[in-house]
Image (cartoon, rainbow, N blue to C red; front, side, top):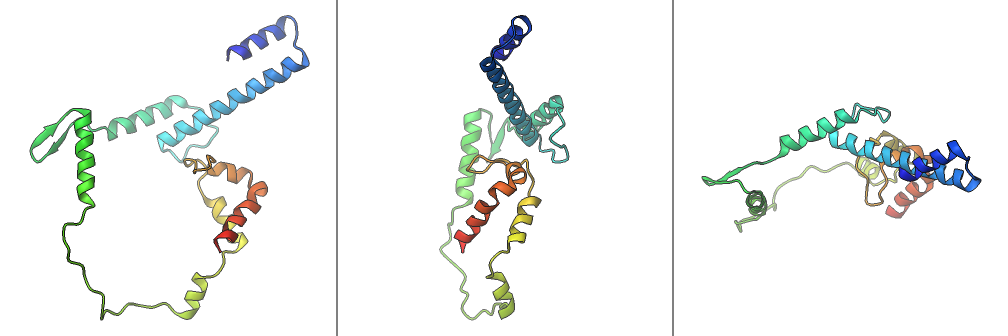
Length: 179
């Protein structure tokens, strides 16, 4: 921001060289990009899918995100009659709960021998094993919400919406690799 301010001030007094004008435009572009990322981040935190990208009401987004944070906060936890209030103790009890939740203590397992299961017809089986069609893949990409959290590649679905013509062959190549 300081670099942009100094370049704007210099432009008002002396004018800018071509290199300085390029640098000013580059700094402006970076600032706009960062503001866009901040807006997307707050929109995701607010969990309000009905608000479109052009809404810059960050006060609303802050209130929604803080509301969700307050709503999800555990100030204390009671386990077997003992109350835990320290953050580390509460976290340890939550972790312990989920560790024991997914452990098996019984050695007995049901037998499936002799049970009859429904089977699908040959036509249905063939339809399930068929290749996805190009139009089907493209339609699924278009139908996905654009402001969800980015994947491992760092791209939001909005990127794929806006650049579908450029990345279409790469998306289709993923499905070819699948087959």
